[in-house]
Length: 220
Image 1 (cartoon, helix red, strand yellow):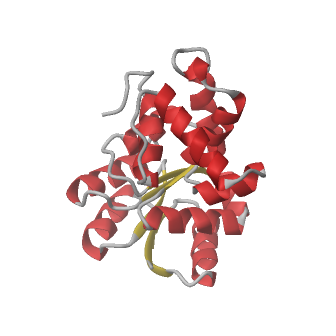
Image 2 (cartoon, helix red, strand yellow; image 1 turned 45 degrees about the vertical axis):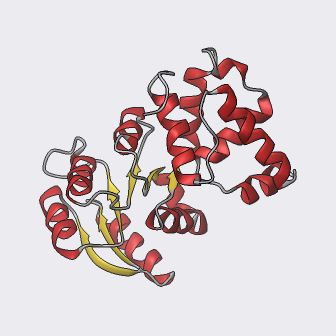
Image 3 (tube, one colour; image 1 turned 120 degrees about the vertical axis):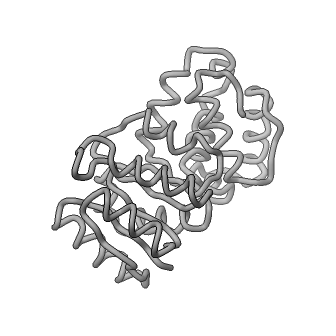
């Protein structure tokens, strides 16, 4: 699995390279600025990009914008964005095209090697890897609004784990319930949100996140 890394801090960039190589990823390129990231994504056609939101020369959202432009050229290009803080706008921009293969993790997650590598693999395979703090903020913002307010506490727990990209089996293991119970909860969630159930886990998660981030206007 070939990876392009974009991170301006040398120590973190070098750490990401060493970590991913230790888990048998091939590092196609490791760059420290927006223009080099744009070239690497266009020329190397990686399986996944791990990108810091803020890169030179602007140090604003250069990394994110380079990744989004690359996804316009190659729809569905898997991108895992790293950020120092939760920015709901970034999550919305990543999810906007609905093609999947996106992730948004706080840099603190890098220190949990297995969790981080699992996120990279999940995104590379077309899934999602959303930081729990991002999901919690989205859920909290919508908690008092209809139909979010109709969800039970357990349904909110299930939806939070779904939004992180967890499978039904993983959710069942986390909550110490059966997969059948999880399937029932997910069916109830989509019914209350006015969305048809789907066997496509990635599209299901994207629909929930899009609904939450668009202020309840519904998917699409």
